[in-house]
Image 1: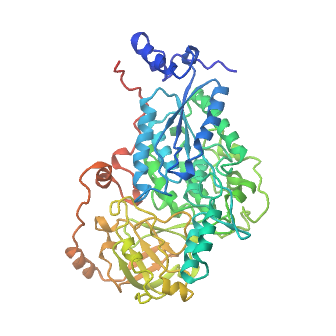
Image 2 (image 1 turned 135 degrees about the vertical axis):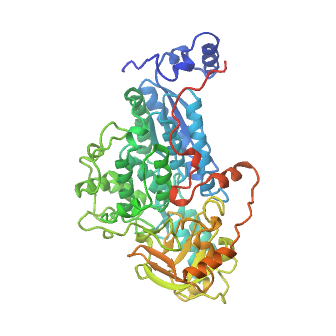
Image 3 (image 1 turned 90 degrees about the vertical axis):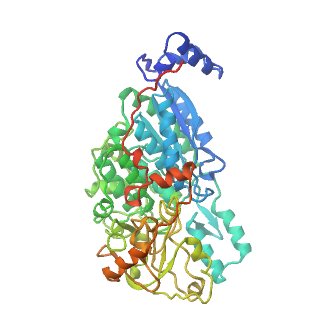
Length: 578
């Protein structure tokens, strides 16, 4: 084994200190049973784990951390595990997105404040992955992401069941009488049958793939199921690799380049990934000073077909994706078609092209070839502009209904998601299949936290009449497991005076996805008159984190990060108080 001792390491400002300070740091660590020899200048690797029973997707990460430790010890480092908060969308109210920035702050400060030379980031549920990447990027110490892996495929009555995606389907079946309460209760136990995050191409799976596409996760590791032994092999390999990265001084700022972000945007289109990737990638780019404009998410993907046939856009699930070759197979297809940059360096120390050289695709149904794709080029995320969303809005074309991508209909406006849900089952609700449902005050500041509420279920009376989709417009988000013709992330949001605040029942809303427009067919003079009458909502919060959030959160087109967290703050060793 290579001798990795180095008295100039960052951690030696603690463990190599002379006199009282060094004695204090080393002696307290030794109460855990560490011998004096581990403080000899070897790399100290932090293992940041978001394991929590309140975040079911992350509950198994304690075991993953043990595998990482084995790898760090193997490579001659000293592994030290520490907890972070877990932002699980499954349980947190009002939304885990409210706490993504708080988790990013915590990860950043914990890394900087402690005697670490490198870090392995253990995440699972969808907000934990971007939060950890954002925090680590702001410190800029060598870092590797290890996601916890998807659950095994759900199974119900002989068919595959996708987490999240089938929640919406089962709800519709309940409302239309195709499923009983007892059947639904049984089905929910068939949906999540192992440790891991959503096994659909929801936001958790999307962000795991995005982390790999960015070069921050080991090749192929995004797709291994949480309970597959190779998930632990991957974690152990990450532990070994991060020790080498410390020696090489390979940091996030060397990996998270403009070309790496372009690769991630295109990969997200090819996998049929979540619209939430737009928010998270934009925020992460802001941390490393990379210019990533909302329009990049449209421009960069127009030539990229959807290659992956996974729910909610398709048929299969992450377990199938893994066995079909995983993300390396997708990236190899894109590289072969000239749609990815092969040169960016990754956590392996090798380039994207080197990592994917020889990657194989098994079968043609789950990961389709570039020349006969699952969906043609131009079916990725569309970025819309117009008088209803001057700063942009997004729509996931691969999960939308083609016949609704050009649509004109009267608005039916609801001032909150709760206001809609209160009347959604009313048989006399004044809507038809042409109505455009508008949900407002669900943006970053307005809710607060920008919840996943935009794909509200269709009115019960229309479901019973056989209507399966409607145009919905909202300043909130949609779960990556969701589907439908839903315009999301409308910016500026209604709560800060965006045009969505001015819409009234009956106003004609015109959606033209091919032309990339969303507009309100109301003349400018009338809109100006309404704006004069509009008053901003009163601030609901006077203290605590939620007050901080509402005062400083940026709009969706900026990634909904805090303005004061943009850019990096480095890893300078804090002053010694001893």
